[in-house]
Image (cartoon, rainbow, N blue to C red):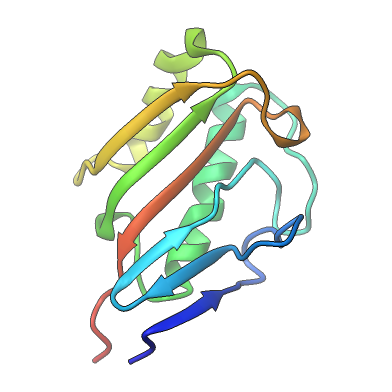
Amino acid sequence: MTIFGTISTDAAPAAIGPYAQAVRYGDLLFTSGQIPLTPDGVLVEGGIEEQTRQVLSNLKAVLASVGADFKNVIKTTVFLKDMNQFATFNSVYATYFSEHTPARSTVEVARLPRDVLVEIEVISTIPVEG
């Protein structure tokens, strides 16, 4: 079993700075914040719904790269550009976490990278390798 290592997958956008998409520590995975970029690095147009879907799609890909999925997530941290969009964001978020609801913090921030509307990071367990 890998005790520590950086995680990278082509199914999510590459890091746009000196950081990893995620870091594994034992049976835990700590993702970097994902913003609404497609895997080829193109910023998703549209509002909070479209951007939230892309962010969660990116996180799904990072989780899948270690054999995990949203059922393994134990904590999410959400950064919103405008807390007035929380209800719309939350309705999209709930479709990804309908069976399992992790702990969550949500904060409004003055600005996010590339002026996006949402960024999300997660902490997840990693399923035991068979």
